[in-house]
Amino acid sequence: MDKIVYKNVSKSFDDLIVLDDFSLNIKKGDSVVIIGGSGTGKSVSLKCLLGLLTPDNGSIKVDEQETVGISSEYRNKINENIGMLFQNGALFDSMTVIENVCFGLKSGKGISDRKSRKIGIECLDKVGLDKSILDKYPSDLSGGMRKRVALARAIATNPEIILFDEPTTGLDPITASTIDNLIVDTVRKMGVTTITVTHDLASVRRIADRVALLYKGKIEWIGTVQEMDETDNPFVKQFINGSSKGPIHWARGNK
Ligand SMILES: Nc1ncnc2c1ncn2[C@@H]1O[C@H](COP(=O)(O)OP(=O)(O)OP(=O)(O)O)[C@@H](O)[C@H]1O
Ligand SMILES: [Mg+2]
Image (cartoon, rainbow, N blue to C red):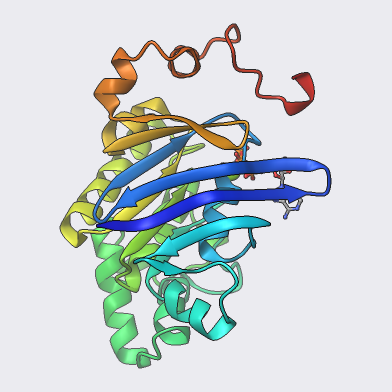
């Protein structure tokens, strides 16, 4: 069954066309990785799914239910089942680690303080963080620890879908691979459907069941990691070789 279906989604900001007939089907339990140059609309595609941005046209279905144009009440219900790790970590600076991790449990699910604290500690343990940091603030933590806290927060509500936007960017290769393993582990154990955005090919190889290349507002190519390595598609080849020569000109002004 398809868990998430984007169909002909378009999104522009004034004159800038970002998503243009963007279609993508994601099966339940699948881990899809979206790759593509900076500014191509990867984060926008995730924000449209969360309802933080509204597509101009098209449809986004979750569990076969339309999510574009729904009431805020229904949106809150849908989002209770979606965890999001934002590109910059986006922890609340004025809240402690445990308050950050438990935020969705208390606000969304109305779980008591004591129970949510227990769940929060379990989630922090899953991402390899111990109790000593519970009462620290995000500014006291390293970048890798902040990503882990953000990951703990994304899984705390036990969501059916998790969106990871650049989970390993800016981290050293060892921390990055630890985060990838955590993602793969938590996802496999929890049977979650995930969309991950990353520039990091090593991460793609560790995480992806399927890789989707976003170019000029559309999914230009989609396939498994093995298919990615074997394809003759010039867009994919240029991306995996990191070459400035080829059909791709990321900067939209350079078309
Ligand atoms: N709320 C907004 N208002 C206006 N323009 C926006 C908004 N959000 C995104 N954009 C523009 O849409 C384009 C795509 O942005 P997006 O953040 O999706 O890129 P991205 O593919 O995630 O890039 P990166 O890899 O650098 O994170 C950019 O040109 C960006 O400036
Ligand atoms: Mg982005």
